[in-house]
Structure formats: C-alpha cells, structure tokens
Length: 270
Image (cartoon, rainbow, N blue to C red; front, side):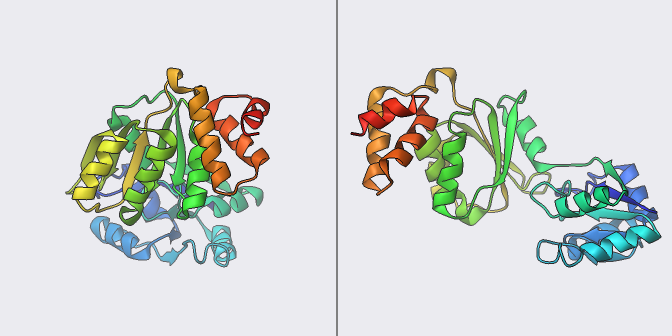
C-alpha cells in the first residue's frame, strides 16, 4: 500500500522547492498534477521522469478512483499548479478519500501564496483568515465581505486581474478604507508588493491595468470601528430596504455588521 504525498511546489521561481520534495517526486510511482504543462516544466528542470496524470477541478471526481487505485501499487505525489495542494486548488476530496481508505497522507511542506503575502504585507500576522478566491458574483462577494466586516484579524484573499477593481470597490463600500497590501506575481520576475489603503489602490489600478494573479492582504477592523453610530446604522438599513430586502433580513444583516442588537435595528427601520 502506497502513501499519498501532498507536495508543495514553487508559486513562481522554480528554485523554491525543497530537496525532500524533489526526492519524493522522483521516487513516487505517479504524480497527480493539477496542470500537467506546469508539472512538465518542473520535471524537465529537475530531470524527474515519474509518470504524470492530470487531476484538476474538471476531472477531480471522475479521476478519484484512478488515483486511489494507483496507491495500491505505490506512492502517489499530489501537486497543484503552484503552492500547496488543497488551498483553493483540487486536493481536498482526494486527501479525504485516501484517509478514509486507510492510506497514509504525508505533507511535504512548500511555498504557499497566502502566507508568503501575509508575512511581507506589513499587516499583523498573529491572527489571519484566508478566504480563498473572492466570489465572482457581486451579491455573493458582498455577502462574504459583510460576514467579514467585524473581523479584527487580518484577511487574505485571492483575486484575478480582471475583477480586481470591482472587488476593491466592494471592499471599500463594505469594509471601509482599510490598510491593504496587493501582492502580485510573487517570486517571479515582475513581483510587486503594493502597500497602501483600499482607496489608494483603486486610484493606482484605475490608472494602471492590473496584471497577474493577486493576493490581497486586508487589515482587520479596528477596535474603535467595531460598533457603528446610529446614523451609520440607519443609512445601512435604509440602503438595504431601498433594494427591496425584507425588513427582518435587513435588520439581521445590519446588526451583524454594526455590533447593534437586531431588535433595536429592526425598530429603527419601522
């Protein structure tokens, strides 16, 4: 019975890989890769001749049994396109199934974009919350941000270049003009760590076309911002009611955001 190795691979610079990861990739019977082309670049660079099979979002369920069967014959190394598998990448279902069937699952630590961005952001690192990619749909994205609005921990999220400005607008509207670090193309030739506030980022990237994959690191709510004043509560409630949201639902949402009691908010809406 083989082992499933969860192997961290470079997020950009191919030199960012451990000796242990290289050994495991060379000794495994099979590599299950999110992106076989990206895996091919890594294999050629380090003369890795292990057979590779694709394992990505579109086939992760249909390919599950194939990979599990391979574990009966030997070790399998799971890699994502970049970084640690399972973090906003395929891997969770395979790892869970392997555990349930009694296979050993062994982590091979490596680069990971959320932590890499966090530690260079200049924002607090003692507590943070990683939320993956921000939702594509405006309503879902706003709903997530509203749930996070009172979090005092640093927030970390992924965003694509073509949705960056839209997301920054939502962040400014829901979270306010907080300190922010935008990390793009990390460890690559055009790496950039931009630091400022949400509104400043909007101004910069309105003038300059966003390029590359972004990791956003957003400051948590300050203690003096956690409870809204009455005018702020009334304004937020009126905005939701004007959008046709039922008064009980609007009161609940504003209460969660503002730190006010839901019953008190409801009465303000009458």
